[in-house]
Image (cartoon, rainbow, N blue to C red; front, side, top):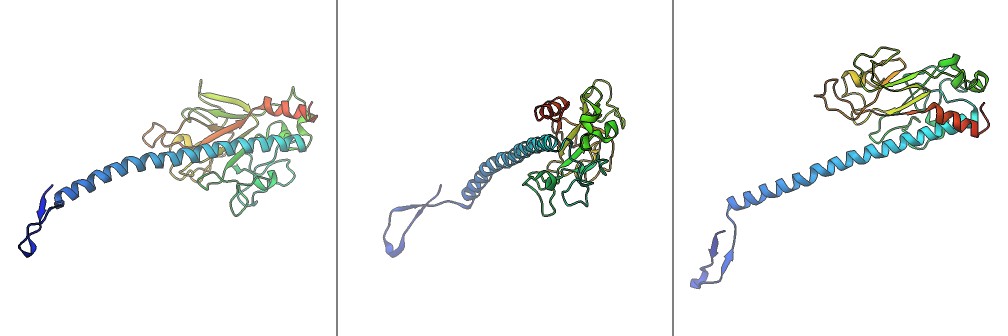
Length: 254
């Protein structure tokens, strides 16, 4: 630090503290580093909060689906891109978009929706929903499950831990996380499907993938440098045992 001395009017005054340009530049540099260290964790916290909020909403959607099934003796069909958040077709039966549709937020009475009635995640992306068409659409046809019977019902959606080695009807050996699933609900995450061009995200229908089969992929987030590319989908599914138990409790099954 350099001392600046006042000599006006011929009088020597007290020393006044000042800074050179170099010292100011160093101070700004240090402040920039400190702020950068704070802002990065803040952005991370925001993303973590959005992820937690989305996970919570997916659980609420799952409960809404179970409640709908208990009340209507069937699962709701997915909404199509043109159905404005209403299941397609209205009234169930043979769904128009079993594997590549959206959560029917209007049909389920959900609150977090976009201007067109579709359920959305914390990034504003529409949440996806798939439902089995097994047993001749018994799961989405009124009284279909009770008519078919618990011992015969065989939902057939699959969840794999990787898209490597999967087909349209099976996971690679040892990679199945769940099989015999009646419904899958998932958010496409921050990238909305646009940034995920790798194998794993492509297995789940999204803005970049028109994949339309009953096999889905779920695992922890992965960067674009991962073997199967970027993955930030948030996936959950409906256990058949939970569904059956709730429907039995509601007097809908057996």
